[in-house]
Image (cartoon, rainbow, N blue to C red; front, side, top):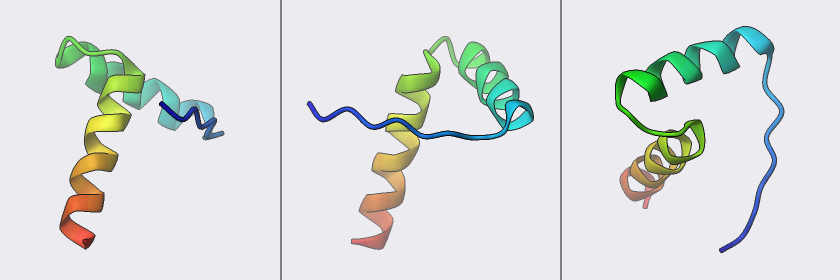
Length: 43
């Protein structure tokens, strides 16, 4: 698996943490899932 580092503002990171917690996922898993969905819609 390839590793990517994305730098985002602190307020967005806190929002992502809240969303991930509400879905019982890690921030990394939430981001990967959402990016997968985006790529599949664009492809």
